Amino acid sequence: MKIKEFYNKIICDDCRNVLKNIPDNSVHMILSDIPYGISLDKWDVLHDNTNSALLGSSPAQLNAGNVFKRRGKPINGWSNADKEIPKQYQEWCSSWAEDTLRVLKPGGSAIIFAGRRFAARCIVALEDTGFNFRDMIAWERSQAVHRAQRVKIVFERRGDNENAEKWNNWRLGNLKPNFEPILWFFKPYKITVTDNLVENELGAYNEKAVKEWFSNPNNIFKCDYNINDRGLHEAQKPIKLFSGLIEMLTLKGHIILDPFAGSGTTGLAAKILDRKYILIEKDKKSFEIIKKRMKEAVQRRLFE
Ligand SMILES: C[S@@+](CC[C@H](N)C(=O)[O-])C[C@H]1O[C@@H](n2cnc3c(N)ncnc32)[C@H](O)[C@@H]1O
Image (cartoon, rainbow, N blue to C red; front, side, top):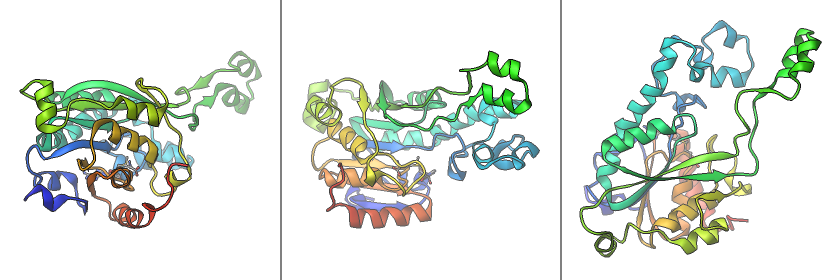
C-alpha cells in the first residue's frame, strides 16, 4: 500500500496487523502513549500470568475494593510467575518495535510514554530492535492521585496505638506521582545530520517551540490537564503536551503515527497543527470516540 492511502486515517485493529502494510521510511514521527502494563484495565494486561492476584482472581482481591482488584499485586513481584511480568512486557514491546522502526524515516523520532514501572523494559526492547535512545524527558503535572497508604491508619485499625504513633508520617508505596517519563528515540541515519535534515527534514528539534509550549527549553515539560483533556479515556493525555512534542520535532505537512491511539489525542494535536496523522486503536469503543472527537473538537479552543 502507498503511504497516501494512510493519510488522516483512523483504523480499528491490532496495530501489529496494520503496521505491516505501512511502507518503509514513510512517517516523520511516532507519538504514542503505549499501555504501561500495570493492569490499569484489561487492555493494559500484557502477560499471561494466571498464578497471581491479578484482576480479582485471588481470595484477597475478591474481598477487596475496586482499585486493589483492578491494579492487583503482581507488579510487586510476589511470586515466581509475577517476576515474569516485566520480561513479558519487554517481549510485548518487541512485538511492535521492528515495524515501527521500519516505517519511520531516518532521523525521525519515536516519542513513547511507557510509565515509570516498565519504561526500562521498553527502552531495552526498542534499542535491541535498532532504535537509538536519545533522552528521557520528564512530564511534570502539578496534580496527581496519591495512593500510598498511611501506616498510622493501618495500625490504628488494628487498635495498635503504640505502632500508630511510631509510624506516624510514614506511608506504604510510591511517592506522589507528579512525574511521568517520556522516552525519546530516533531512527539512525547513514548520512550526516545536516544531509539528513535536507533529505528528510528530520534530526533537529525546535527549541522555540519547546519554550513556547512548556515555558523553558529544558527537558522538564510542565503541563497540566485542562477541561478538554478529560472523560474520554482512562489514560487520556493533555492535548497541549502532545502538541508541544509534535511542534518540537516536525514541520507542517509531516506525518505522525500513533499505533496505540486511545481517544485520539495525537490525531487531534496533529490536525490542529496542520500535520497528517495515522491513528490505530484496537478497541472499538475507543475507535468510535476518536472519530467523534476528531469531527467535533477542532474548531473549539482547546488549550485554555
Ligand atoms: C494508554 S492508552 C492511549 C491513551 C491516549 N494517549 C489518549 O490520550 O487517549 C493505550 C491504548 O492502546 C490500545 N491498544 C492496546 N494494545 C493495542 C494494539 N495491539 N493495537 C492497537 N491498539 C492497542 C488500548 O486499547 C488503549 O486504548
